[in-house]
Length: 152
Image 1 (tube, rainbow, N blue to C red):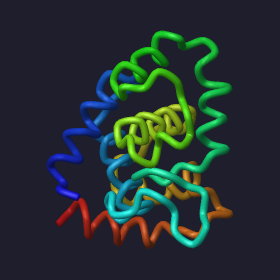
Image 2: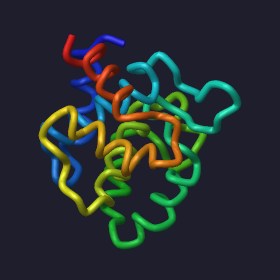
Image 3: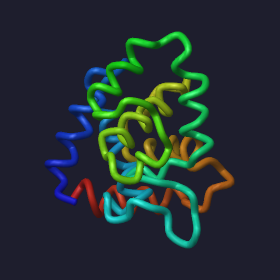
Image 4: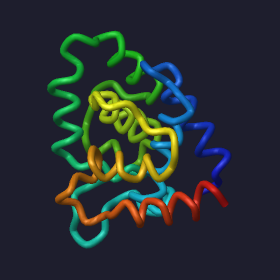
């Protein structure tokens, strides 16, 4: 995927959300680089269940929908308006990049620890809070993909 256009989309989708920063944008771009080879895959390979350019898993999506919106109806409406959806459905992640980016930002917003300021820090943050320690990805892979797709 073309870096400049994807960065513009990420920034457009997360700028109206709480706590926008260039580090939040870079973390999401790094997540896309690691999870989908910068948008090459929109569905997890080898019978995995993750969808979209951020390869979000159904339990993560469901958790955000069930627990994050309860006291944030304006935020939910903002995301619906910006993504063009009427209701949140996991399967929409596969083809709706704006939704995948927004949900990934909401996932990271639930983390109390501040976003790091370096791509090496992003790699460890991603591993701890997105891929989890049970996931197959490694911080080293994240760093390599960040360098390949973002630092070009």
